Length: 269
Length: 250
Image 1 (cartoon, one colour):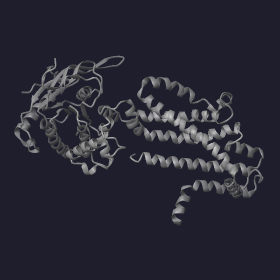
Image 2 (spheres, rainbow over the protein chains, first blue to last red; image 1 turned 135 degrees about the vertical axis):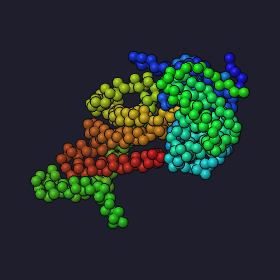
Image 3 (cartoon, each protein chain N blue to C red; image 1 turned 45 degrees about the vertical axis):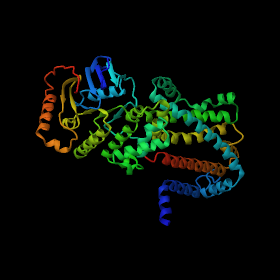
């Protein structure tokens, strides 16, 4: 029962880690629908299983039960229909920036001319075209993540999955990256599932923030962020922003109360 | 220029100290000159030898054996080591062979190999391969295990199959450890080649060594050993250059 305009559908997803003595439930029957073209963030305390959730959607980790569909297609293994961005740079240190961005196109066997055009377009989109001959190790953390984003966009995935991509950056660089990401996202309009532990980052970027409480991971709340776009960093100073932030902060700090399990869906207008 | 040469001398000071100690002992005449010749004599013989076809004919035979055995071992060992890190079945099959085979003195198998493959290059190359496989497989395997899984995930994310992932991710990512294995294997190849040639051969550096030993002229033996050491040293320098070219990013 594929819903119209759903980029990603997760139904009753469960992940259980089994050891000899006991089973640990990491994710407990989570259902979530990400509408086409929307930016949805998952926030939650560290170790709550939000990254595991994303890795399952990416096909990198096997689920125990439930369904994961991307544009109606069931996810079984990793594939270029889902562009995955990691917290640490996954750029290959033995290749220069250009060859890193071209990698996904190279292994598809794309003709050189077409490939070069695409790489140039996306390196210019992230404003790092002039660094194309450098090695990743010669660049800053923020630049590396922009190149990671260019590499993912270059192979044109249907959806973007982002696992705390700015988590390793300093506060100021992180804010710059958030603005960059929104600018780039507004041009591509791909659906994004973004995982972070940073509440403000989630509020600033997202159409919808999904609050996980762990462990096991269940959805404790789904909050629509009703700020118009385009957004800029001044948003951080607005009282409504504070309200959203405080609401989510309260949810995350009710951890010692047993959270009510709400199986929820994001449905946007 | 003089400073440069002096720095090079300092790099190898331990060798020079050893040579000086040797000279002092030789000069003191503690041992008969026939058994303990001066290094100047040895170097003179080595120089004459280096100009003779006797050396080059035998050296070329040995080098062909060393390089073919070493290359075959690398071509087999590197994929096996990487596959062991990726496929459980491969690991399960290889681990017992490695742990049981490693302590065996493989040179002891040489007489059997001679019966099976003959006294020529075949049996010698086979033993070199066998000997070199261990350090190459083991170093490649542990290196491949340490490859950040994020590179593997990223390549899968971009749609790489096993073969592409091997050539374009695992091989370069494991390269530093592979070179560690090769670095251990290369001198082993030289040693095994010479050893087997000493046991049974009519050509090669090992043959030359045993031929000279039997004539009991020590300076000839020492000169040959000296030349072998130089050859081994040059091989490791060449490997160094290749490594720097491949792992510029490390």
